[in-house]
View 1 (tube, rainbow, N blue to C red):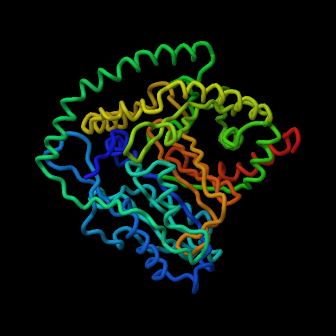
View 2 (cartoon, helix red, strand yellow; view 1 turned 180 degrees about the horizontal axis):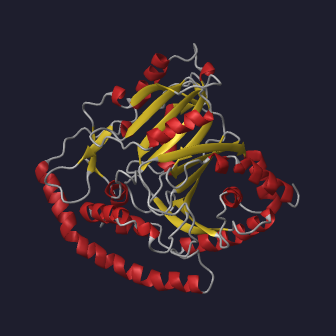
View 3 (cartoon, rainbow, N blue to C red; view 1 turned 90 degrees about the horizontal axis):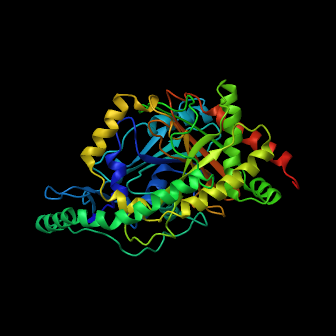
Length: 463
């Protein structure tokens, strides 16, 4: 049995029927590139070949009776691909609105924890003749980087690319009850010692972190975000929309302003949100605050675990009308926020997450939701924004060329919007997922992205 890290397990403990913690991706495909043409049976056969080689698709959760710490992964000896792959048709007329509504319904359904924590919906009947996939994976098993890597194992550089060569990492050994008891008791007894070792680092970090903030040299402070209709208690209902812009235009803006791609991405989101909130008559006078997850795969010293992430708070200058001013403001605030973030140990979140307790976390989230506390205290943050690097070249998923890959991250009580951006073969794909009661229609926001891009191009010094 391969035990989950505390951070991985936290995504299980914090999940409820309203706060679903799987990650999704809407992938659009050109089925005409498949050798012999698209046929669902052929598509499923190629998928089965690859799933047989990738253990992450066949592992399921295991919580032995005599285990007092986090659950583990074991091989599902009764794995059946039919439980995970579903063939469905989009309602007529099969345009982007019907597709997004169908994906929103899928995103609002929990995964079955008795089976490997993923599902794939093959969606046919689209008006343009393409095929779409809606892929769901639980956050306990993937983060942005590891999820993208898993999808890449299903893809190739050519329609007839052979399956990947991967080392055999199967874990078929059934958990030994006595060994699990001994290991979990040892871990439980050792936790006070682990906490004592971590406390000095935390005690030294807190005043340093607060000091930078008070001197104006840090990231925005939580609980200082302006309140908008995005910020409230959520249910399990979801809304979805997506957009696509040219990566060449993003890079042209980056070079013109002398900033980073991430700065431009956040400026795009800020510009689109400004238009969206203004249309709703609720553009705040203060900048929004976004939580930006950051991969620490290259900085971590901890082995094991699927999630290797941290996060920082970013100020989004939605209150500024001038697009150029938004870019320069973001570049400076991001520089300060990243320096502030890097002053924190990359493994701190993972180390403290080892103490996560399922009962305490579960009760806390349910009480928070039932009492609607997200509407009673100052807003922690307005939304989540992720920027995930994707493939620079065209990829073929099981023979079908990928024409769009729109990631859809989870939403949380108090922040009912997630915007995730992924670069993909010369395009920038933007996936939007919202809590339906807070943002019932996201197409106004999705359609604001091309306009925000044109504003930035027009304002670029050397565009």
